[in-house]
Image (cartoon, rainbow, N blue to C red; front, side, top):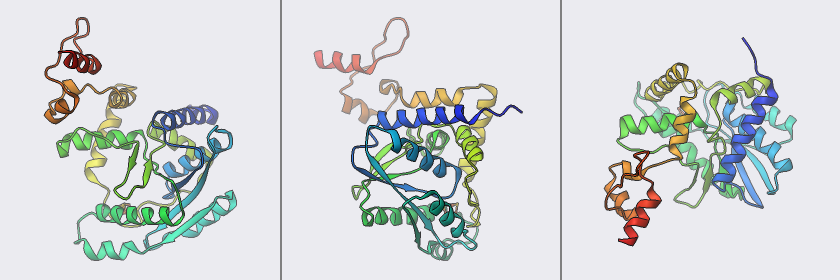
Length: 279
Ligand code: SF4
């Protein structure tokens, strides 16, 4: 098996991360970014890339690293603490026993994830406030976004993925700097860097089955049609509202009809809005 040199993977990841940061204005001068680290490959990679970027980016920002110890039996908190200490990060381990709440509230045989992640999000928002952080960075990557797109399409009757940047109801700004990064690159990077990955099965909850299924579907398609994931991600950046049936969106955009454009049969939304305004 050919192993690509680390420099190539790192360059690709850095380029993808920088592009996402710029495209969505994720960072501003003076930002204090709370990097949420779960101990998995994605958040370690995000943290590492952001630190490298902070050293040479024209925008001045600082990083505060946060991990939530949710009280899962056997959670190897010390492994994470020692790594963060050795790397010199401004690191905060927040101990909150949500595990007991979740196992108490959720009936046997049901998955914990929805309540568990809601509780964790509440903790992260509170901690961001206490630590005076201006942004909260999460490690979701391209595959997470595509899986969510398909999950919404197949099971929720919605066309939408994950926002690269969002403002919570309480005013927290959440960013996803890895939005354009391929999971395969992240995995290769984390392996090469030997990040001390924490096990993710301590909670004993079943994995989200539907997410696993669409993940497998995407991987299968990628194997048969190399590059298809990149094409899908590109589709999320090239939306044709007039080709969809969302009447509220039509109204919002002032559309009265889609208009065929000779040559490609596709309708550009700017043309439609202009045409409508002129009529
Ligand atoms: S996998 Fe476990 S830790 Fe992760 S959200 Fe689900 S219940 Fe919580």
